[in-house]
Image (cartoon, rainbow, N blue to C red; front, side, top):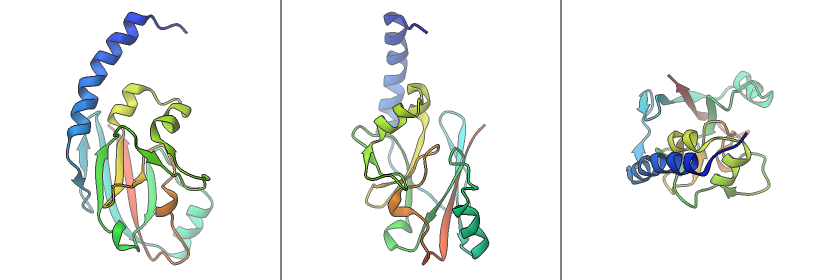
Length: 160
């Protein structure tokens, strides 16, 4: 597969203004039970749910599609308020089970997510702007469900 330089420049020229616009968009507080219609024809939603033994079992068996949903711990006060935003230069992410954080740009590149998809990919962050979840990736290590977790936030993402 070959990309001509003029095609790459055209793609970049179209992507840059939209990426700049999304980067300048303020944080949106993620309210429970509300559908957020996003650029790129997608919807994000957050619902608080009680974590019981059957949910814990389901999660431990990996019966969650990371493309479409994540369950994150809400027990710490810093996570009770979540925000919806788009990717920013220099974003770092520590996916659950990974040895440490990496640049989000590198993680998305390793997963072969195209630039046009990355531009519209929503990010859920906490009050300190740490990334909690990016659709297609596992939740962050700091927001994982623990044995002590009683209430979780179920984040769902769908493309229309």
